[in-house]
Structure formats: C-alpha cells, structure tokens
Amino acid sequence: MTLMTNSESNSKKNAGDLVGTATEADKREWPQGQESGFQTKTCIDVQNYGFFYGKAQALFDINFKMPERQVTAIIGPSGCGKSTLLRNLNRMNDLVDGISHTGDIHIYGNSIYDPHLEVTELRKRIGMVFQKSNPFPKTIYENVVYSLRVSGQNRKSILDEVCESSLKSAALWDEVKDRLTQSAMSLSGGQMQRLCIARAIANRPQVLLMDEPCSALDPIATSKIEELIYELKKDFTIVIVTHNMQQAARVSDWTAFFYMGKLIEFDETKKIFMSPSKKQTEEYITGRFG
Image 1 (cartoon, rainbow, N blue to C red):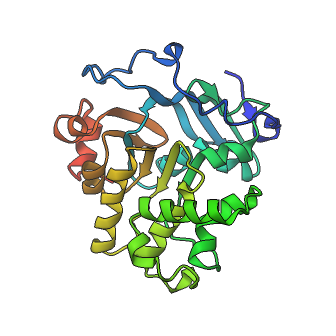
Image 2: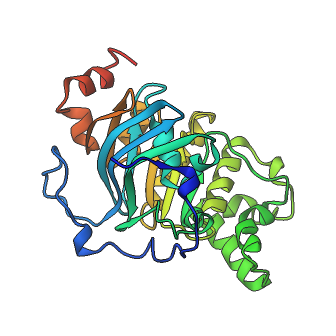
C-alpha cells in the first residue's frame, strides 16, 4: 500500500467534478451483509482506508460504501476511530501535523485526495456540524450567509433568499424570522445547533457530516434535531457519529460499528440492531461492553 502524507495534498481542481453524480462504474458490489436488494447510488466509497497520527495507527483497512440521500450512523466506544473517519471525509484532519493515510476515499467515484483538488472547495461541498454548537459572534443573518460572503456573493436578494431557505430547511425560520439582526449568541442551545446546520447547508453541499450533534442538548432539542435529520436526507447524504444507540436506531438507514479502529460490521440499521452478523456487534448493542 502507498502511504500518503498531508503534504502531498496540493490543490487546484474544482470540487464540482468531485460531487457530480454517481456513475455506473461506481456501482460496485456491496460488502458482505448488504445483499438485501436495496438499490441506490453510492455517494461515499471508503476503500482500504488506513489513517495514522504520526506512527500511531487510528484506522485499519476500512472498506464500506454510504448511499446517497440516506443517513449513515457510525457507532462504537470512545476512541474507536468514529470521529477520525468523519473528519477525514472532508479532510479536516489535514490541519493536524504528522498525519498520513493509506487507501482512498471517493465521493461519486472521485478521490478526495486527488492532488489537483482544491480542498477549500471540497469543504464547501461536504458540510460539517460539530458536537458543540459554534455560532459566530455575528447576527443570525450573517451566520447563515457567511460562506456566501466569503465566496464573494454580496447581492442582497440572493443572500436574503439563501438565509430564508436555509433557516426553513433547518426548521428555525419561524422562530427567528423577526430576529435576524440580533446576535446569534442570544439563541438557546438547540436553536444554536439548528443555526449551525442552516449555516452548513447554505452552500447546498451534497454531504452533511454530523459529529454527535445532540450530545450537549436536552431531550426536546434533541428531538427537533432528529426530526430535522429525517427531513434533510431528502436533499443531502448525511453521516452522523453518535454514542447514543437509540438515536442511531431512530435516525439512520445504515449503521457502521467501529471498534479499536476497525470496521466490525456495516449493514442496514434494522439488521444491525435486530440481528447483527457479528458477535462483537451484538455485545456492544446489548451493552455488554463500551
């Protein structure tokens, strides 16, 4: 296997090529355990993927495919590599010194490690929502349209339209439409997290990554986020990392179970939770460890 370092990521290519549409060549056989006859296009294809922090290996030979416009949950105990994989899908770990990888990750058949790929463009197409809501110290309106302004878009009619549509998609418009000029810091915790989702989808990415988006929220706010995820998957491919087994069962279509940097099992969520193929998966789901 060829070891690739983050220093090899020179970038020029427009990400529009990366996130086009899945091709026939990309429709490979599903891994073992996915022979249910479910047909959809592959969005994210993780191929023989290994990842290193210096000499310490965090991920080992990961192989699985995530369907487009579906929700894939990644579960497993702390330190199993869930968030490491998630952050590699839009190459956020490139910011860490000394990282390297083997294998590849494809989005609609195109490598995210293409040396000509403009990484900033990739991150526009693969949005991310973090565990702790992180609104900017700006108005609600400016939070939502921030990425458009950075891209050079300043036409008010376009910004207004994007702000409204993004807040509506994040189920927040009715609550803040008369407060758009107020500070985002005045919102409740659940509202802040939905604002961050609105900000992440303002550029209309094709993939939305969520790193334990409900871990700091109360049950009511969590319920709203979960309902929102169900609606968002109509337009976006969603990958969510969660420690909450019940949440994974409620919101996801597919579930990947990780343990000690290895993918133990990947299948439709109902099968993972009702009749897992691996004993290790069953023991984790039933709470015998982790």
